[in-house]
Image (cartoon, rainbow, N blue to C red; front, side, top):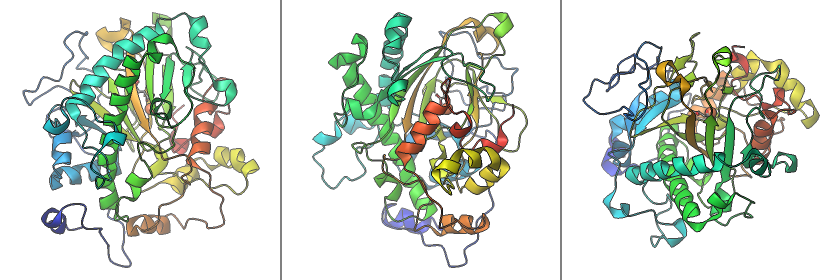
Length: 449
Ligand SMILES: O=C(O)CCC(=O)C(=O)O
Ligand SMILES: [Fe+2]
């Protein structure tokens, strides 16, 4: 597709209309790091990408060849950067985003609450500010530590699983990492975006999260992370040739959704348990995930590969991955047969759900090398389609239509479910006693274990 018109007229002005009988471009070959990080994850650009207050990430473990994109360039609608984003979302769906140069002077002093926006024409919300996002993330790490330092008995009172909610606390070992029911080795605390912005009820929470100071930091983080998500969605929307703002409009900051912040904490494991997974293999069940971690342990299984590769944490960057919203539409002949279908489909499920964009399997293992005796924490923002969005192929894109034809059609008589229902099923299915099979997403046909 031509980039010329986009750059001449402004990227919002043109919706791409590929010709009739459009055939899909081939999926690009998996990228290799060509822009600052060599294959074993060491730097070659002079940038300081290390976390100097932590034991070093080893240089003798396999690392994932992920691209490093620049938020600043994406904000500036750099067509080369937009093309790199598009390619990497089609081949692996995981990349680094450099936030250090994404600073926007207009909002450098903080984050404007969207309801305070005085620009009624600004439908896409405020331009994300990379420095503010990093700053809020740095402030949230110690707040998360305070939450986890509370007694187990108190934390347990914020586990809302029995009320059908995945917000709040999940204890160590309260989730499963495989179909055998092997327990996980991490604890979560999930904070609802809708709670923070007054869109839904205020959930019970520990004192450290109830105070306005913490809530303000969380709101700032959510606003900036959401701004990044919508910026990325805008690029993908144009590349997919969808009607203007279609993806952004399914992900409004002030829309009712399952968007959330999550802290994940895994304590160091005794040697005999070193191989235990902290977090089992999965794809994220939303749209876009913005992740901050500092110690290694996150691994992805690159497309077509057999070897799990570490994703080396980089200072000043977040790791972005696409969730399965883009790749999933769920065939349901009837709700009762849902579980059966999910279990039986296996590779067919992957085929059936394989989309134009990619949602890659990942998991969390013990931090590697000298990092192994450290407590690992990460901070995640999960953006999801608004609650009432139906999970079915989006209309208005020749590329998506062509992909459907390639997949043998969409099956018009199939029932579809809402984003809300799907997220709940997947989130709670990975809790002990949950329905692990029903919790599968697009990883269905590629589970290793
Ligand atoms: O902790 C990490 O690095 C990844 C966490 C993750 O994949 C998740 O919470 O879905
Ligand atoms: Fe994840």
